[in-house]
Amino acid sequence: MPAKTEYVPFMSYIILILIAIICLFPLVWMLSSSLKSQDEIFTNMSLLPGKLHLRNYVEAWTRGKFSTYFVNSLLYTVLGVFGILVITSLCAYALARLELPFKNLIFFILIIPLIVPLPGTFVPLYVLLKRLGLLDTRTGLILCYINGGLAFGIFLLKSFFEEIPKELEEAAVIDGATKWQIYFRIMLPLVKPALATLAIFNTVAIWNEFLLALIILQDPTKMPIQRGLMVFQGTHITEYAQLMAGLSIATLPVIMIYLLMQKYIIKGITAGALKG
Image (cartoon, rainbow, N blue to C red):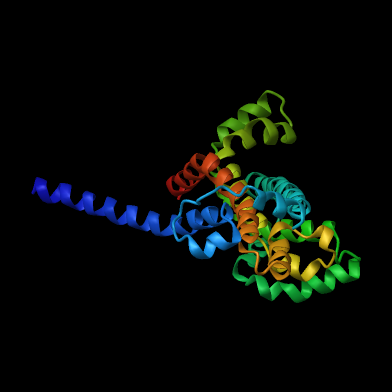
């Protein structure tokens, strides 16, 4: 029996390692190709480049205008995530802790977008932005990103706020704290794992978003990095080394953020599971 018990975890580790290798291989191949010359990509099948061609990144950053695309994506991601965190935390706090009329109905209305496919919102969004004069504007795209993250954020944070003991809030009220002070000094610190999880998920989603940018933006100087990749590929379709460098520039920031913040994702998911 002990031998069988040890055998099962060993096989599980082997399977997980194989899955990890399969998932990581495209990333390693992309990085390897980004450091090769154009000819070497087709002649050298090894993952180790014969000579490092860092010039590919310089060309992608300057001639491919990835500097502009990168800054745009950074702006959209930071402002979009910030807007989502502010609005969802305020709304979830109000729905979870305040006595509001019809708050359950309001909550269900707010989370309806969770069951609506994203393409199903494109037509009304386009019409609304056109009437507001926000088509082909950074403001219009950021507002769409914020709108897209509200339903899930409210759904996630409301459950966390509801699990906070009422005694903490009552003690703060006795000490003379206002609702805003309770929100900032007590509630927000206690839901940090959920806020971090929400921030990471939306960072990845906004950074990798393509369809909304394709529909809303026409000005090349306002394009995010994923929209710019399509333009870059169309312009330099035979220059695979520079294309791989551009893909690396678009991919590595998200991977780094995820690796640095993964402990918060685990804490947030674990806390949510325990609360459930």
